[in-house]
Image (cartoon, rainbow, N blue to C red; front, side, top):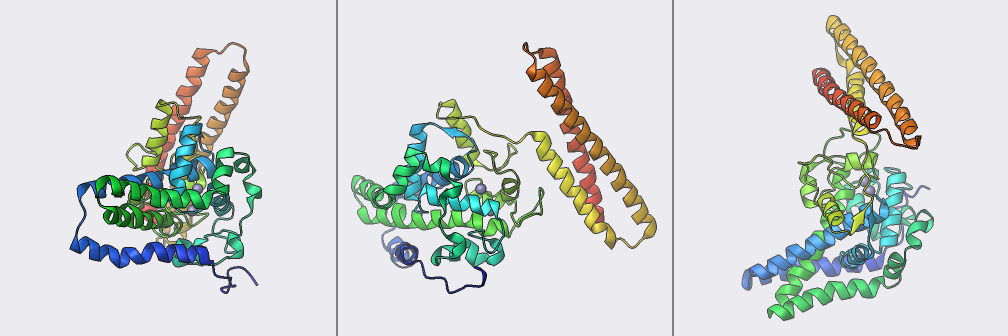
Length: 379
Ligand SMILES: [Zn+2]
Ligand SMILES: [Zn+2]
């Protein structure tokens, strides 16, 4: 029997109790309190700031730093993410990152992806945590690097006291300072936790259902600018599943990705370094390839034979152009390696190669626009 069909996996009571204890006050006491007493600006500010600190500790810390190693972070920054990540109550860095690595490795596999979208929206959003499914069984063999990190080990060992201290300690402290304990507990404590939870869970659920697939159709992950607004920039999930080691998810300057901006800002403060980026050429290559594939897939639907012949001809020309561009790029990479081997760096040669790479990127950008136009015609 496969894991997907074993719906009777044992219930995960600690998780169920945690979700009930955090959700029930939000749907019962919270609306009553809000209608009766209301909240002031300071309390709302605490809610937003703590939500941001929790959300960003998960996206910049748990996700892009620890699960994907897309950059390096200094110890103070790691400690910060470790504490506010514990406050987000999504398990330890070790458990979270290990299962996330499995999610990428086995994406959509109903037996091995811990939150496979192929098992339904509810399962990928929350259901996967409510039972001890075989697909979600912790196995840290894929996280030896994290087990070697003392900050990660410390958090894993003391996860429960850390999570409780952060979740109750900070809202209580803010409430006492502000002179309204209950207001702070409800808003900065309970509501913040529930909102922060579901916004992260959207990445496993909605970001695999709703949106476009401009880079790959190999998996269910989608790019969605609206989701990016609620997930600190993680809505560009189609890109992320193809290029998981890039520290950015929204790669264009105008794409809402506060996590990428935070990581970048940390480099200016000396808190982060060695940010990994996928070369622009490879990104453009994936975009063009996807459009060419789209045209190929839809050509069969064209009935008009003369139109079909013209479209086939255009596709062939574009395919040829694409192949030539890739060959040029490969040759330039070879040249680059050879230039790097030389004892003295030849700046003129180096600049020439860079110039040529930029021209090829531009050529792919133009080609993307052309092929997309053909794809629209055959859609
Ligand atoms: Zn995913
Ligand atoms: Zn990821």
